[in-house]
Length: 329
Image (cartoon, rainbow, N blue to C red; front, side, top):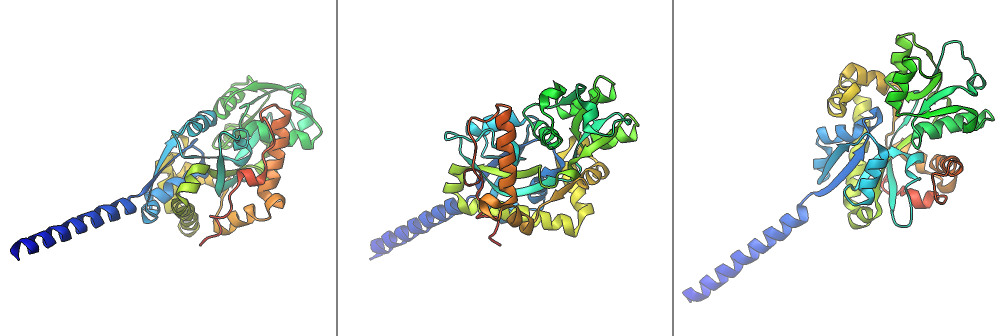
């Protein structure tokens, strides 16, 4: 009888151990790695982490600053990253049958954060025809510049374009080596403050055209939909926190994003040139399928990048967007 009790006790302990191990495995946080540049609009990714929202969703998010979108998209294609934050127009260049990813949330859109700087006596794009213009080829800067000149009836070959990063283009313009440059904050404000030129046109003229989204590998979306839902919800909570307590939010995001945005004051100033998307904004941007604001950006990206030889084939809204996670409260 004693032997039987010992056997039963051992079996009970074994069962408890197996249950505990299986429960622990089931509750282990899903790890998600995301690459991005140091842009003010990506601050909510860090804010959600610092406020513990990822932990609440039982996910572990690793955020990596990579100052070249081609590099973090290559890392994502190779499986070294699970996703990235980038502008919607830019990511469609990388989408293919062999590299599947979809936008699941919108982070922000540029509302004055990107701009074309010129000499103070320039009043119209036509005055820059044949002039030296610095911009980052293959980036949103090139897409946005082409969007501007397309509306004005010009093409890129009408200008003397020099391939430079947004930072280097601003520096070259300040040094007098360029007639104009496409760059972003904080360079736009600095150029005006230094009286080295003016912002001829900024992204306020093209609302919604430069929208930053979070994209994730299709395999992650399929295998861990609950984790993706938790990530999207965490970002929505971060957007709500920014609206409720912007001063604290800017301080936290400045510390995490760093670089030229490392001071809360600099971050706050730059943040006023972008619009952070909450749940309602994201739903509205994705809503309507092929007639949605997102689809309009995709169509423009297909047209412009196609003309510049940067896409192999047009990408559809359905191929690039998964709106299902944004609408779930």
